[in-house]
Length: 118
Length: 109
Image 1 (cartoon, helix red, strand yellow):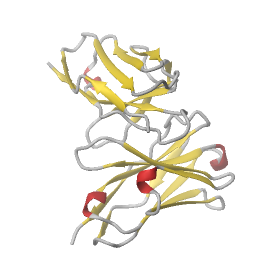
Image 2: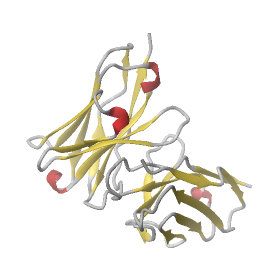
Image 3: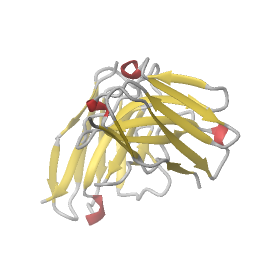
C-alpha cells in the first residue's frame, strides 16, 4: 500500500521560502507521478504541479510558475516542494499526492500547514 | 484553462436518501473526470475516476456518470460517514492545470 508522509507545519515570514518534503513508501517511487495541491483555510483545492521522478519532468500551473520548484530524490524516495517569495495568501495546507498515468489523484499525504505571518 | 463548476454548493440530505451532485466543465473533457470526498481535518480521498470507475475500496453506493461537459456523482443511500465536501476535478485532459470544482458540501437534513 502506497503511503506518503509529509514534513511538519511551518511558520514563515513574508518573502521567505519554504521547503516541504513528502516521503513515499509501499511501492516503486518511479512508477508514480507526484502532484502538489494547495488548500487555503476554509477554501477549496487547487492543483499546483506534478513531477515524474523517473525522468524529472515537471509541469507547473501557470499561477505558480516562477515561485514553485519541485524536485524528487530517487535514492530516498522523497519528493520536495519549494515555494519562494511567500505572501500572506500562501497560508494553506499543502498536500502531496500520487497518480498513475491517468492523473487521477490516488494517495494523499496528510498535508503540511504553512502559515505566513509577520 | 478549463473551469469546473459544481452544483449545488450545499446539499442537505437525510440519512438513507439519495444524493445527486453535479459538475460541469467549461469545455469538453471527454471522460477525464474524478470525484473526491473530504471530511473536516482530513485529506481528500479519491472516489471515482474516468467519470465512472470507482477507486479501490469505494463502496458501490457511490456512482459516477457523464461525459463531455456534464457529470454526476450519485450516492444511492447516504450513510452518516458520507457527510462531507465533494470535489470534482478534470484529470488527464492536457494540457494542465488539472482544475478542481469549488465543491459541494453535503450535510445532514
